[in-house]
Structure formats: C-alpha cells, structure tokens
Image (cartoon, rainbow, N blue to C red; front, side, top):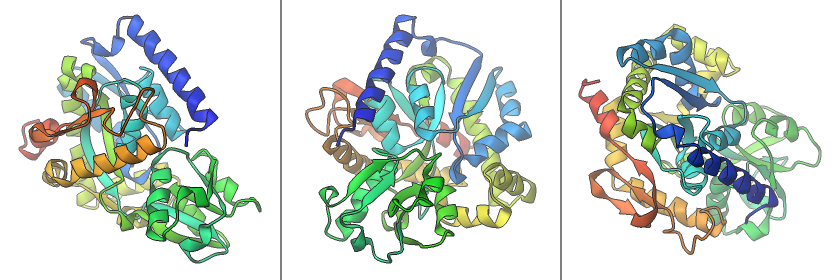
Length: 355
C-alpha cells in the first residue's frame, strides 16, 4: 500500500541523498562536530537528559569531539532529515531504520538497542471495546511506520486483513487532536500520545505491543561511513547513554523528573510509560538481545511486511532486497545491497567497562 504521500517523500529523500553524495559525502569525513536527531518518546528521553545535564558534553570531551542532540518535532521527518544527510545519527525503530534510510540507500548501523516496546504502542477504538470491531473503519496512524506494522499484527490476531479497514495517514504531532474529531473512530499511536488518548472520553485500548514483545525495537542509528571514519562518536554516545541508564536503574529522582517534564508529563505519568517499555538499563542485557537468534527472525518478519507494503525501495523484487547484517556474521537479504547493520561492538565495550 504505497500512498502518493510516500511516493513524493521517497523522491524528495532520494534527491537530497543524491545531492549529499555528489557533494563529496560529507558524512564520511573525519570530523569533530556531530549532530544527532531525537524525538519525544519515553525510550528516547534519556538523550535529552544527557544533553541538558552535560553528560553528552562530558563524554564528547573525553573523545575530543562535540555532539549536539537536536530535537525534531515530527518523528518521520527526523528520519528523513537523517537519510538526507543533515544528521550523523537519529533515534528510530527497527522497521523505520529498514524502510527509510536503508531502503533509501543510506548504509546505517544500529549502535545501541535501547529498549523494545512492551505496551507503548497501541490500537485505540472510540466507543467500542473489541479489536474485531475495527472492521470497516478508517484507522488514523503514521502510515508505513511501526504503528502500521502493529495494526497488521493486530488484525492477524482477529482474522482480519488490511483490506477490511482503511488507513488514514496522520502525523504523530496531530494524532491527539485528531481523536477529538467526531469523524475519527480508531487510531494507532505510541507514547506519550497513547497515554494521553487513553484518558480521553470513549477511548478503549484494544491491542498493544505487549502482544508482540521484542518486535518494535527502539535504537540509536548512526551513518555507517561516519562511524567508520569516526568511531569516537559511537563510543562517546554509548558512554553517555549508559551513564544515564545507570541513573534510571537507580531511580535517580532528579533525572526522572527532568525527563518527565521534558516529555510533557509528570513523574507518575513517565513512570507509567516506563512500565510498558522494556528498557535495557544494563549493557549486558542489550547485548544479549542483540546477539539473540530472535533478532534476525524479527527483522525478516519486518522486511516481509515492508515488501508487501511497497516500502523496501524501488526495484525491490522480494523481501530480501535490502541486506541486513547481524553480529556473529549472520545476515538476511542481499549481500550486494547491505544497508542495515546491527553491531554489538559498542554495547560490548560498555558491558566490559572499556569505554
């Protein structure tokens, strides 16, 4: 299901990527200043805290570089800008890493597996209580994102297919306001929007990501060529991340309060969102997940979904069009078009205390 919006978006991104490449591939130079994009989401608020508290600067200084974490209000737009070369890295989910930068020809590496959604993404119906009642409805969501993937997995669970509903593309920045519209009857979104909508009149959560644990993964993705030339960027970011993870694991009140406020909620609300997020506070746990046999299986499933929806890039003849590499030499897809990589290198350094 390829929308006109998505087609135009691909053309724009492809043009910007080509321009970047022709200008000498600025991303692949040894340099000292870097920018990483992030958007508001419970699993990514640690990046904002790391920036505001000076933790990012501390680790950047250790490696003789400068890093700026840049907030972008629209999630998909942040990934588009990364894909076009504006940023050296960006936070994103596993599916979006595959279907936007990787499918767009930008070789990208998941450096940190931060968490997986365990209830942070959900399907909400208005004035109805059962997922099966979604049949025949318009469903508002960020089209071709993990929300779309969650919808497809939910439909499978009640014997429905996408032809049984109609997807209405809606920005994550607009979806809360959209719920108040009388025309909207169902939607799919993620936290913090999900928590806000759940509290609104008539809202019923009928399916969430806890039903598909480990399939919606939140990651820090960096341009592969950039970190080849500048491994210190990945090291500094990893060090900063796990310093904040240590604070969160120890329930540091100051850190939690700051993250809650920055995400637009209070401490109770933020902690509620954390309960539906499988955070990997310890690098060893993130490492175990990254090295698991389940990760390649999940990514194959995501790739198959993406191919069926026409978002694996122009010329994709099947789900193996975009190649993916995993630790221990495992791969999936075309080895001649290897564009998404999962590395254990930096999480391993963190787990061993060698950063």
